Image (cartoon, rainbow, N blue to C red; front, side):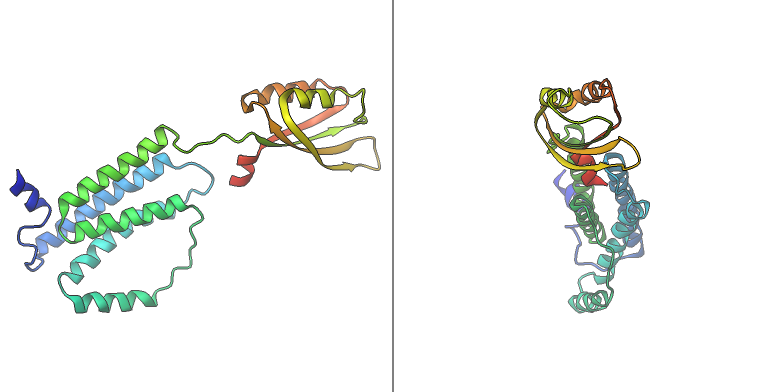
Length: 231
């Protein structure tokens, strides 16, 4: 069993010259593992910053890094030469999500392991990394529902002591503040914008329904702060 692991991990005969068969095997393994990583990214992605080209780039990066490792082999001179050549290339695409950057590093490491003929390390590493990503997605690790929201509506009356609007906001919000008021000179309608700190975000529909029952109030729009940040 130990010998099989050493063969898969490239510890036996690692100093030998790369053969065409080993190069093809390294590239094919990198291609398969790169697709696994890309599919996991596709299945666990959330938000509005999805990019098809980034998913394809994960596969290509894994294969390219594997090919680079086979080109370098055990030659330090070749390694320095490739470093100098790659230093000329400038990547202008900025990654907005740190999670995307972690997938880039995963693709690099898997490609390096496959290209250096450490096949067991590449396979086990890819399985572990993908399993961790799936686990974090399933348990919603790090998720923190935001209680802050932005409320906007049109109102034809005045927000005074007799208006039911303040009592409704106090019922569903721990605090609220008026952000802006814009009145239309041609009519009695005015647009109000409030910053809310909700007591329970699961009662948003109740809040919107209660506001809709107020006479003279319409066009209610309630947006969670987390949704605004994603846009």
